[in-house]
Image 1 (cartoon, one colour):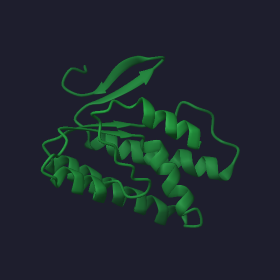
Image 2: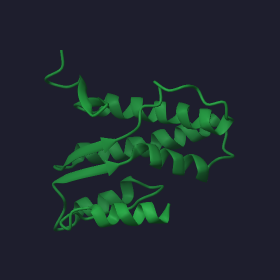
Image 3: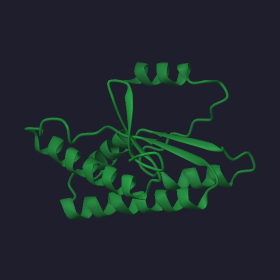
Length: 144
């Protein structure tokens, strides 16, 4: 995993500023957006890794408490997005098209990510589903 992360960092354009926030998305992003050299575009890659981190950090929490925590973080993120002039792109895996995991932790992840994805899609102006490299607009001004 460390090698994979190193390659990802190495392949990023030099002009990109990277903010790694494994558990708290909104607070560090709020600080970056308040800076004098605030970005005009923000790419959050990826929501599914963030959900995985949150789940593993709170693995023993009951489902309702974990869901409330995740949605609280998402609400802070969407409020920040609404207050910012930056353009946001959020990337997440779609887990609703796959098999249901036979593993309890896998099912918790699928359910939690599905809930988070729905909340983000509801708050977003535009939503795309990308399958086999082909984007399909699900929500937005050009969708019918």
